[in-house]
Image (tube, rainbow, N blue to C red):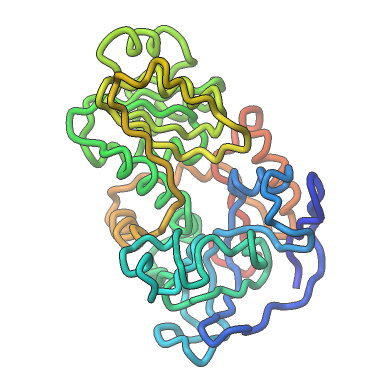
Length: 346
């Protein structure tokens, strides 16, 4: 098969590699119909994740068809259409029973494209397949379904839910990339008083306004007014930039929440000299994808207008082009980039 292989910092290529095989009785092999490029993939390509070894197939978001299952897979059959979770869950450990799949203690967690070969390929081996896939309804388009593999659960679980967004809140989202914009859409479910999006890229601020932000601007007067005035009830850090995190600490009100979504490849300064009196809660976390089924139903019935997050589509064989377009999103206008196999219906 063909797959995108990591060969070390700044070096990935679309190579011919052996097809995956069943290694554990709980595995399934899925033929990939759609996959995406994630901001974390860019961090891996830069070498920010040393645990990813050269020779690893990248990618951790996919939708496709089950083609083979292990002897201990009970809820899937070949031919099933599934969303492959970015997180693998054994289903039996205390963490999984508590819905904290990202912290799986039974050998799961973030495996695909990290510790095992991933989904930017024609085929992917899915560990713990019964607990790490969700059936894709026939009426759910591929480009919408693939957003449920990681993007939407991350924005909801790590951003909106961890931040405890409530009716009447002022919510600030720092970083208008795909996960930040998804957080805007999902925060709307909770009827906040207003949502303010902060980013340096004008095109992304325009996207934020189209997707439901009440205000979208570069860091400046509005954040200064919040810092000197009432502050925001919830601030969602979605930039992954150390300065973005500092901005969050300035904007949050006393007793407010900072929910960190962004993947930080560099240390961020925690200004306790100004925060110690504010009784601020800071949450971090890895997505669990425990919310996928709920989000899927909201999407099916028209409550999540997320299709506009997908701005670019490519064939699987243009994986390297997709990386470049996504990596330069502020100039290309790329938000979510989806790659599909030519056989897959669009």
